[in-house]
Image (cartoon, helix red, strand yellow):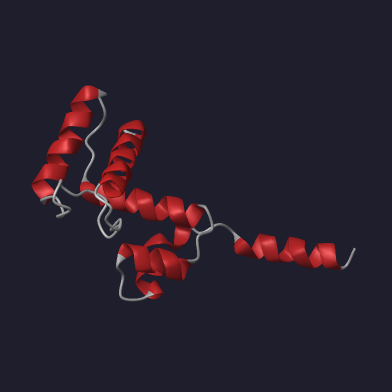
Length: 117
């Protein structure tokens, strides 16, 4: 699925250059008129890939959860992740996803140990 997503993003950027318009990254999935796809369309894409690759059932909500979890696991600041998720503030993100945030206490202890060596 990631290969196809990359192809889609490449197409999107190429179309953007060809039509000399500014790339609007507000939406991940848009039609040729740069309007957001209907949720049913995205669901149909997911069903297509489930069948194509014999995958377990995938939902838009599940992909959203995975997206947030991956960002946090890569140490993207919580404020940034909250903004990308559309949460009202970072406490909403922390309540749901705090278990995905890497152990920063260990990082702090190691940094202090290096300073005292």
